[in-house]
Image 1 (cartoon, helix red, strand yellow):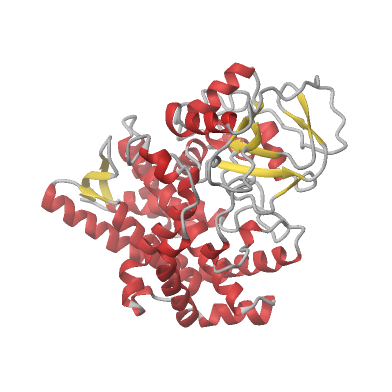
Image 2: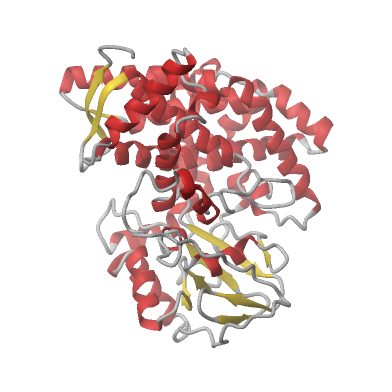
Length: 483
């Protein structure tokens, strides 16, 4: 049974017992280094948080979060961790937390990565420029909605044809590369209004450019596992990675937006008061970090979760998709069509619950306030940094029944009430992105596009199977009969 959380407040009156925040930061340098090695090497992120939650018998505790020692100058690793739905909700209360420069904790990559512009994700809503840029981002999405579905489906056609050819030739086909090409091309068309093929270098390699650009910003905070320890610690987690390694790529992308996206850039200048330079850097961040980066993490998880399922989910999805399509007399799904597919939508929400594209959320205390968990209250001091690890928050056993289990029907029927605890978008799924908050501007587009992806696969194929140990499709059978 879901339980309501109470919002954190500087003046909240609570009947919960007040206790000191458990945990410590350890000795200077040594404590932070030990926590960093536990997080990346000896335990991994999930065990890191679970073990401390068990030790302190609390979902709220103090610890250090990487990056840290030795070469991250001016980065304070100390955080107050919040791991239940009640305490985590404080991160959305902008009366008590601020979001200035804390996308990935106290560490902020060099502004060179964003053309020396503090893009909207680093702005707090109290800053005058936030509403201006967020309004522009919301308008970008609204205008892009006209071509969003058609652009996505046409590029999905190319991706699926590539996978079919790979399976016919080799018996299986990796889909990550074709998927990223699909995502990049459709986002360029929908957000910028530009066809990337107009610039051969960007059209062919734009998604790789964005991958490198994203990696250099995020690697100091991510457990990678691609190279053995201690090399990963020495090479990836000990110092900020330099922008010059991708400076030429960023310049090419900047010039592509400047030339091919003239209409949206001009609109940013004339209607939202942004400079041309700031407009292009914000467009690139929305395109590359928020949209391309988010889809590149989420879609592979969604596809492999469905493609590896052994409970009969695929047959149920296929039945629902074809029943709705037949009822509407449509050959291709649309946003309106997938809104009638309750199981498809619930499956998407459940994947977002268990595997949110952005695992960590941060907020800095704007003032002294009382932070509530399910069973206790804690005093947070102004300036302290709160950190929530969403994969555990959204497995809160006080909110979700059998929280560790993938239950694709969880959000159907009365289960829709639980959507207020699905926080992947920097806010509850029942919330609405506005210029005054930090919720993901594309929240609804992400869900609708994910539903569109699942719907088109089962509209087109009788069977879709993924390998258990790789991002690979092993079986893709064309529908023998469209019901």
